[in-house]
Length: 237
Length: 203
Image (cartoon, rainbow over all chains, first blue to last red; front, side, top):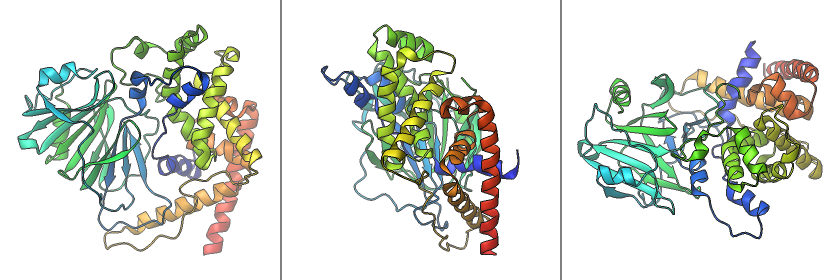
């Protein structure tokens, strides 16, 4: 493969659409016009939840609307283009609430795994319920909420691993699978089921490790070094 | 299924559907199971959408994908498992995208976010010159891609941007494999010439 071919392959990472629309309901409506439009939550669950991380590297070159560095990984979009800081009132994840760990396990459709390195969480949150009472996101909080592990149900298909990454975003591995380390400050938004982008909160702008395991996507955020984060990730039980 | 192209159903919890592959789902759909088709749609929306965007459907990509899924459902009786369901579906997406160009007489294929690339604005002190040059190079590459004839561009998009193999590209574009090979080769040569011209022009 020569240089041009390699460049073309690398270009993909810069041209990736930021978000995939959900067409399931509309396709179904068209195929099934007389029937009531019922949403199939378990199917939507495979595609919809995505966390959007907007990396805000200070002083990066501004590319006029165009070649933005869009990185999509495991339900997470990292946009390394300069973006304005999140505006508007920060809102929490949709319908987020505190529950006990055992209760949380009954309210999500996936096994909740706890990092043995951090031990039992101080607080547990579930968020974004579907109609049947299953929640899409579970968050384990540690150290007074400064370290946070989100697990969310589902991921977008991971096809492209070849990326041009900025200094603040690097590829790494967790359990032999690709993972992403965002070392710099960033704002965090959450894309809910309807595709609406919500500003989650500005509470943490610390480093984040993102990886996928067993069909779930994990996001570990807090005042951790990359090695500490990888260590925590490897200790999920 | 190629490696790295997950056909698995992510994160749907311990439902029976999680373990079904595409062909199982197709069999179920043929037996009248609509929910199985929902699962196929959910599983392949991302690739279908990416394909439509990169083949130039632009803002109509979402409509193209929706239309492709509706057509695929109606044509499902004609699907033979010679190609993967995904390639078969992407062929419908490619065809719908071409129809779009025809009906709206769009010459331009690649209405990507990179299309309107403008010169880099000088940034802060930590801006690497390399990053600026790389961004310019990407913009030049996209510019050159846009100048290619649609057929050549399709081959490049499938082989490199979508990273499809020759066989899958042949299925998706509805071409003999040999044609894919020669067209890709020709398109790369044209692209090189366009880029050389660009460099000469700037220099």
